[in-house]
Length: 160
Image 1 (tube, rainbow, N blue to C red):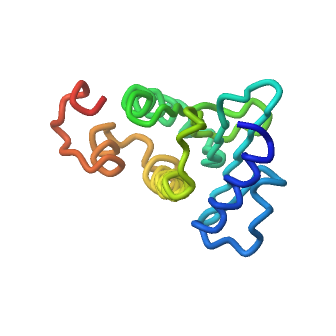
Image 2: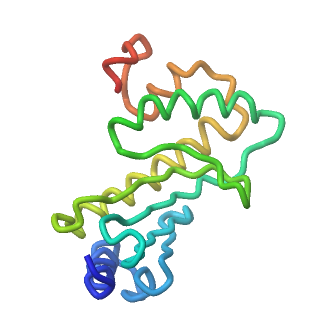
C-alpha cells in the first residue's frame, strides 16, 4: 500500500462510518467512535505492509490497577489469537490501549474495517463500564461472559 491508497481507504472507511469530514481520518490518523479515540496510522516508508490501530480505553483508577492488570493479561490470552490485538499501556499517558495491526493490505475492505472499528469502540466502552469502573475485582469468567458472550464455565482453550 502507498500513501495515496491509504488516503483512499480512509476516505472509504469514513463514508462507511458516516463521518462528516471524509478526509480527516486520512489526514489526522485519528477518529472518535462513540467518544472512544482511535488512532489509525500508516507509514509507507517504515511499515508499508501494515496499518497500526490504537484504541484508547482511557485511564484506570490507581486503587484498582493490580486487579485491572490481572484481567487485562487474561484478556490478552483470549483476544490475541482471535483479533490479532493485544491490550497494552501507553507509556506516555498511562491509558490502556487495545492495539491491532491491520495486515494483508492488498485485501482490505473499508466496510469490514469500519465494522471492526465500531466493534473495538463497543468493546472499549464495555471494558470501561465492566472492568475499569470499580468492578475490576469481578472474576474474569464474568468479564469474559460479558465481552465474548460465553458462559462462565467455558474453558480458556475454547475461548482462544
